[in-house]
Amino acid sequence: MTFLPLPKGFRLATASAGFKKPDTPDLSLALCDTPATAAGVFTTNLFRAAPVQVAQSVLRERATVRAVLINTGQANACTGAEGITNCRRSLEMAGAAFGLEPADILPASTGVIGAQLKMNLWERAMPVLRESLGKATLEEYATAMMTTDAFPKFAGETLELAAGRVTLAATAKGAGMICPHMATMLSVVMCDAAVAPEIWRPMFVRAAQATYNRASVDGDTSTNDTLYGLAGGATGITPQGGDLELLEEALVRVLGKLAYMLVQDGEGATKVMRIRVTGAATQADAEKAARTVGHSQLVKTAMYGKDANWGRIVAALGRCGADFNPAAVRVALCGVDLFADEQPVRSDFDALLKDSLEQRDLLLEISLGAGAGVYELLASDLGHEYININADYRS
Picture (cartoon, helix red, strand yellow):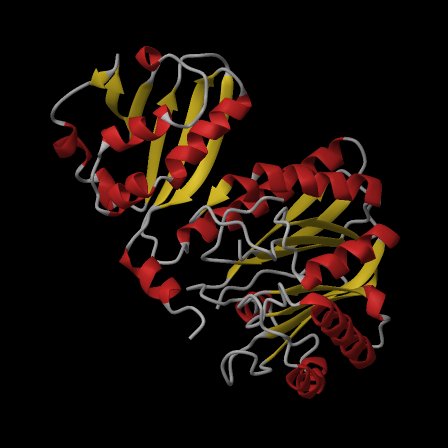
């Protein structure tokens, strides 16, 4: 078991409610001892799950909360008015168990879309969840968030600021339906610095754009994507000026580690492609190119098969919608030039890349030769196991 310190003022709880499987942790709560400045970044999918809708309404009305409540096994998405009612009822149960108002708690759910919450199991699990408060580690908390994840995802960092020492700790879950646009992806960040909401909330939007929004497994954006950030302030340290810049840099590093883990743990994935596009006319064009290549099933299966098939890469570029001259495009994989001047650079690239393609991490560099636009995307490969997992997900 890996130990990472929790930020001051936070306690964690987990329970096995039986939402999906017996004796498997599937319910968790992160509690801040004092009101914490709250930030939330959510899915842009028009079919927003009930917990997303409820949380957004809470954060519109208040700047602080005390807790985050997460369940797996039931996404509570596309469940209509009953889903909203059940979500609010779960918050009432948790509030009663932990001495909080329902509006003090932000909800998040993951699992099968369309299934209503099993409220009898929620009621039965609350005393167990309450009893575990303060006993769960960050790793155990991350484990209770998992669905098809192969391993728990958590990261943290302690910063020495001019005003003193502060700690960040974060967890995430997700392995399939991953293409966040803020997949099924949930993430919680805890921090013991004191940060005003007008600073904390924009910081999280920027951090999500730089990390989670640049990670993709299968190109599917979930109904439930949620990133929460709670700044409890138990250290009494209020970062100012350069300290705020250092805090945001640390947040991006922590979320960047988790974004990598999400792609690494993509359902059936064996590779993490770091697709770096440069020389685009605009950043938007660079993003189009990176995402089209990263989401191409032909490119993804080639990487799974350890096949340096540059033809699939340039074919994807040609349909990405970016503005460039094909004669100016250059492609390199793991440091080996594959394509330039509208033709292959060399014929011996398979032999040169044999050892590199055995590795997990693959760097794919693309220059469009059209400007200064840059974009980087993390994307997984696509193997047989992805189909095995998703063909019978509901059963």
